[in-house]
Image (tube, rainbow, N blue to C red; front, side):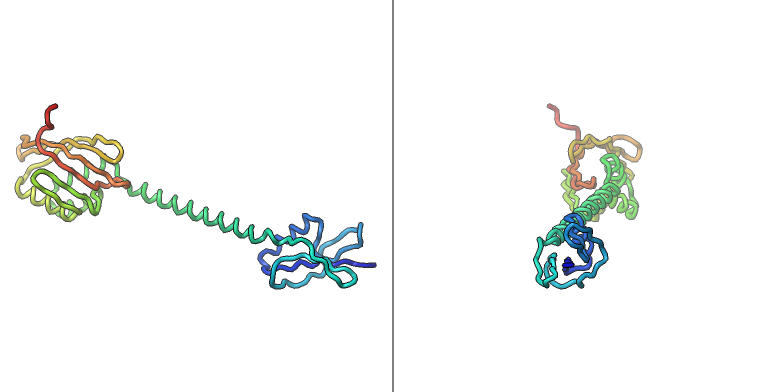
Amino acid sequence: MNQQWFILTRPDPWNDLQPLKAAKRSGTYLGRGAPSGGSRTLGGPCERPLPGRHRLSLLTGSGHSQSLPSLGMYTPMSKLVVSLLAASALASTAVAIRAAAQSELRVTPDAAVVAYCAAWNTTDRSARDRLLARVWAADGVYSDPEPTLVAGRAALGDAIAEFQHHYPGARFRCSAPQTHHRAMRVSWILLGPDGTQITQGMDFYDLAPDGLISRVVGFFGAPPAP
């Protein structure tokens, strides 16, 4: 009886099941074949993996081999798909982590105004620095008609200390912010130690994407009449 042998060579044992499944789907099993019309079973002799491209060969009783269409041609594509899916999953995870971090760090406009106004009323330098660290961007810029123009938390802290030196006991009372996009305006009044109003004004804010204050432009006095 002329028996036939099917030999599948593959370069990577990691993909053992891929060519086997492909051979099974096509009706060509890996192992000893039966005569035409008979049944084929698994478990026959199998050639050890050899380097090179996947190929399926049919060995006839005469010793000649006939190459069949490659069944391993889909393996590189499968690896590529798996790699792309893994990369996509990692990218999605990274985006989720960044979004969660921004959500934890985000400062609301109301909270920004409360802490910023409190910083101007705080005479203790350490406490004031902590307030500014919560709501003021590291490179935030402050300006007013005094004229004052400073950049950074430390410089703003120095400007506040200088103001308190000239107006001891004075305190600011700030309104809730009116906002749109990443801009807002706040009205304020300056009260003396006895509670009488010294002056009033309005500040215009720019906010960074994380909600920190990136700029304040202050104006003194009542707003101009229309």
